[in-house]
Image (cartoon, rainbow, N blue to C red; front, top):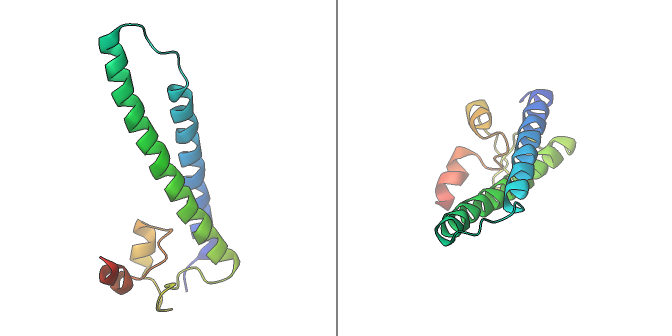
Length: 108
């Protein structure tokens, strides 16, 4: 069985890191735009990248929250598809993964 307390701490640390990054993204997106048209074009491209970071971060937070819920329900470390244990190595690499390696591979 996996050390759920360890993974709860890892997941909460990651969530806090993402939330801090998302605050910076929101701040950067809300900054005053420059008047020069060439600089505005560059800022627009940067804003698109920042918005994508925001979407990716929000998706990762959803996955983390789902993993924290599985910890609360004592189902963490078990594949949500087949019920087999997820390897500790896989959980260390992606602690919020809901799938064992076999089920994740079958979905790709």
